Length: 369
Image (cartoon, rainbow, N blue to C red; front, side, top):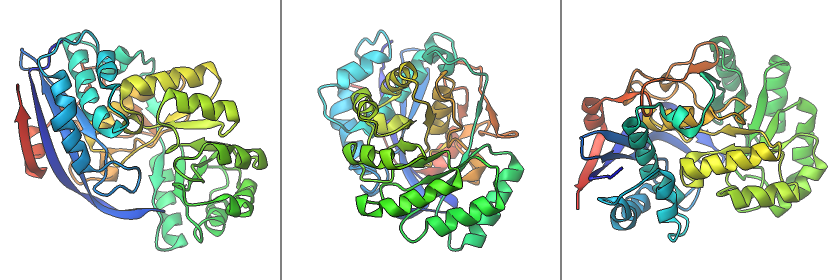
């Protein structure tokens, strides 16, 4: 495979409703799409999941554009690539910048799968024909508003509810959710909002039969999570703390978690995501695929990854209509009774709608030498 041309596009799409976490509220989504073309005019597509501000991690849309333009695209364009795993290897001397790496590596994976005429899921070694999905619910203005949303999503068939929490919006909120929905799969996501001093609060959550508490402590912590996990009956799931298979190895070795959330952008791409999956499978640590408010391009990559065998818990890949009035792909991602059917067309299996993409594009630049 040889990438002859790369186009970067900066898009802005309005969210159907604000999405709030412990570190901020999002009313729209700005992101980068990467389109990589080969000699035959085939295109592979990837998506950067970096936000405009460095709140989830240190990366931003602007730093991703800089890294792609000045460092990553020059490493790939007009170079022979025998397999998408080579992309990750070529980027290895460049430290971190995982979301920027993932964006163009995803485009390379999609292009490669199209060249070999296989679905991306099968190219990764995926086994499932449909995947079970849950939904992530941001911090709401009222508990009644949250309960109403959950009721709607349960009716739609979603298999798991993830409720964002933060200090002051935690125990009482989860108590009311569990009271009204005693049998749903329920988890709480803290996005690093707590410290060791909050251990009594976290221990109170044990009474609600949660399937996990996601990332309660600092985004760069593995050690203190091990201390908390020893005190809790509820499994801890690590998200922001895991950037590589080495991070996963250390977290599992220390007993810092019992579950790992794999986000493609956070770990630097599909190659590294698969390595973490394989390690966790070998060590009997279940994994699931987290979401970053992706458009249909990123959502398609998440679907393909989730077909791997050890993704045994519902992920965050909800339907396109959950977030956007109109998505960038045809057909849009749909959910039926809590499941997404995995497409069987070559590549990501969804066709980018260039007219729609252009309508949301703020800036565009093409590189071909």
